[in-house]
Length: 620
Image (cartoon, rainbow, N blue to C red; front, side):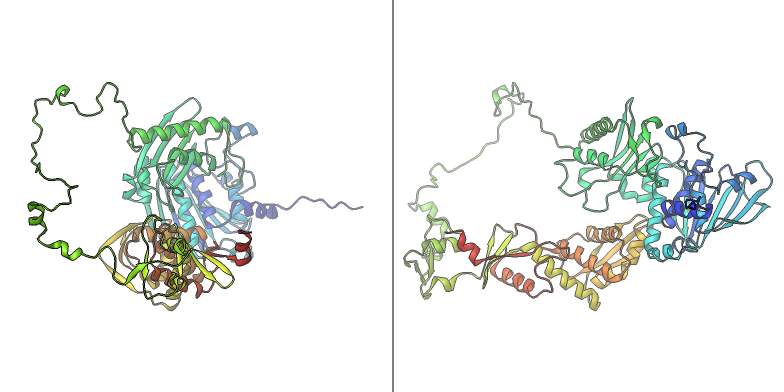
């Protein structure tokens, strides 16, 4: 029997690794910029064309590579970061696997120009699909310059499934922000299609955060600092009043590496319990400094999942540090109940202000508010106004209800107290004909009778359904009416949000939004859709951008649906809002004529019907 197990060729193994390490252009930038930081670079330039699909260039002023190292760096598991397995638990560098460059070279055309510090000549190396095409001496600057062209040129399926340029650029900016936030001592620049998008000089940590997300965030942050034998935790958390449902800036870093950690996220959110509304989030930038031997980074190729040895203890340290910060900056309201030895009411004779004279007041001793006998004083004050209220206790065209056994019916319909007299128009002959078509229950549900039984409608969800259909038709017909603002609002976006905003800008204008680019990530909201009075345009636009970022939509119809849904949710009535009969009629009619009255656009139940036979069973 012939043997069937064989070693894979290096080119195939590299492409398998590339499937895990290099997922999109943002992955290439992440790996190359991290290598530049590990090489001791103090300035890193990133130049991107067509969101990285055409070319990516990363230039650094690090220590560079020799001719031999330049060639060996593209081999699998070739690295200068570790020497043995024990080094995995003493990592102080971003990379250590030795797979990044080999994976990039397997799915792209790569050119490397590098020169060691102090050397006169450098090395130029060209690789395409893991095959070395040329290597020669060249004159170049100290450091390294990687140029990656035609990503996934030899894997058409991977290239086909890349997202739009705006989405890929947003992912690039997100990765770029994570690296920049954890290396404030390194200056970074990012250019896209020849346009500078970010220019971050070396500075302090807080100034780096402001440089990435704008000056407005400076007023939102409170500093956190705690140093224990287990971990040193520093950074910033947001004030409770800056909480938001979407778009909070939330970052964890450990030993200079970005990570995701839902467990520690819950620790921070628990510290804000009862301080922010349910479902809202706050921004935070938390930096952990722990012994490398107490964490395990070798979990996933992206290195964003990290295991901690003392996870529960660090959870408690983090929670206590955040609570201390909130208390230190008076972010938590406090009440002083220490009244021991103090009188319950002011005692002027024992007060240090006993010499102060109390203000003098004057009053009419003959005035009695319970005396119904008109006096000269009250007669003079009324001047005959009481004649306008004669007979106001009962209308002439109303008589007390005399239908036997129907008093309870009217009290239920009107919601009146049983102790109050109930009146109905005398000309009506049947109380059933007088009953309202719809009945509102606890300001949330609308009850109405249908042929099959009793229909219960959630008024907020019904309104979302109706508004969604209206806004969607406006976008499709390009007829969104805009209402100009007397004083334009200014909204700030980070660099990673701007490409998404630009991709949906046309749809925003269809809705009725008018935005003007002021530069530096600031936009002026000059107009909003008509009929959304009372809403906050800034929060509305931010929510729609963040929703589009989360969904990653590349089809306009899907983006339009997201925008219409976000706008409908923001403009819908809130639970507890009392509706008039006319408003309930209009809402129910609009719901029943919509395209899908049973459910909201995001799949929640909007109405339910209690069948008549089920109601009858309740009274058997």
